[in-house]
Length: 206
Length: 378
Image (tube, rainbow over all chains, first blue to last red; front, side, top):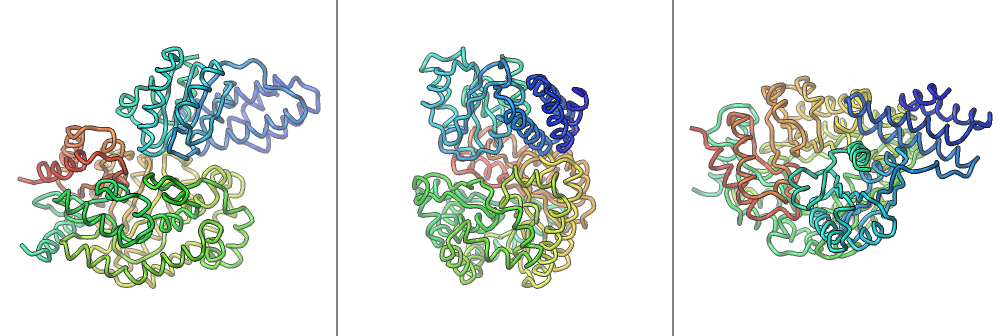
């Protein structure tokens, strides 16, 4: 049944995923193993995206199905999904209120079993510093759609450095207009050209 | 040379490019809504609130940079109201919701509901929009801005021509991709999920919208000048959508709207933000020398040159990130490479999408200067 659940999620078959999750919960299966199968399905989705078979719309749909499956499990059992792979702080930087890209990254990282602290939008550098310090996160993700976000990203990286959190904390940036040139300008460790790249970076770093 | 003679010379140059004929110099056009006020020292709040100031400051910025043949689209009017109507979304307005000198921003939210689809099917798109707009903007703000545009549309065109500038996208037609209106109103996440969950209903709604848009195009005033009209896409981009959705919800509507525009003498300007590389071959299905591709720097121009540059001109595509974060030499290199790639034919140099608010003035200057230096053939 694990295989069927994994495959259904990988195929973005929402109805079948939710039916299978419900069946397994009714049968008294371990909620952590149900979530593990869903995560494996999400990992397959990521691979299909990287191979060019899937597109951003598919990542969004997969994230939504995973969220629904997790809600079903959460309604039956109080579980935080078991041990996490690591902590990530993420937010859209000061001056920018766009959250679509950030939300997709949060969704994919959560499905990838990362403990994600989402600071929201228009986040000043000091809040990134506080969150990274208090949570002990080793990765900070800075999102921004507009070109005005570059200065805020640069200020955030500088604030993390001033707080002596670098190089323990690695910084990744992403958003519509972000390029390698922008990464160099703001002083981040890496840039992700899409949401899946953020997962790949965290898998590499943590 | 008089400004009218300059206009005529530039008009012929751009016309030739659209017809994929050789030109003695690659034309260069301006596009930069928020750059102009920042460059000229006007607050963004004033730019948004005063439609006359917005027109004036754009013309001043273009004059100051010098060397432009024209503009992609005119300024004038209240940009935040225009964007609200385009995105079917609430906007954060500088001076009201945001600091006076910050950039306007779309507030992503699910304002249009699934139930609204049924309303559109029942009453049609136009009637639905009349009832919908107060959810995203005050009725007075919307109507007063639209009235200003109605009264001043012709004057705006004349102001550009008086200075010798050609307006590429000057046709008076209000029709776009149904996908983008619905995606803006529903929010990207919700709308994308609608495509998976209720595809038939979404398509039925799009078909209702399409019929109304085709009717509007048929009744549009006969275009003068270049006669371009945006047929824009951003969230409908190939990089974002699975092919089965793009083939069903995007491309058929592009073709039908483009064909209707062309039949009316209008030149569709495919203002395509994001990455459309995957589907560039499909451009071959559109009539030759009748459209302009207007990408933002993310679509692969080498592929476009290979597969569709014999069908339509390209207006673009200096990336916003380059203008904001690059150096003048980077900009010059980009311009030179574009001119070389297109071999000087079928190319109108233009900032990709829109020169951003924080584009460096020296980069904008390098862009125009390089267009003249490298764009001169022979």
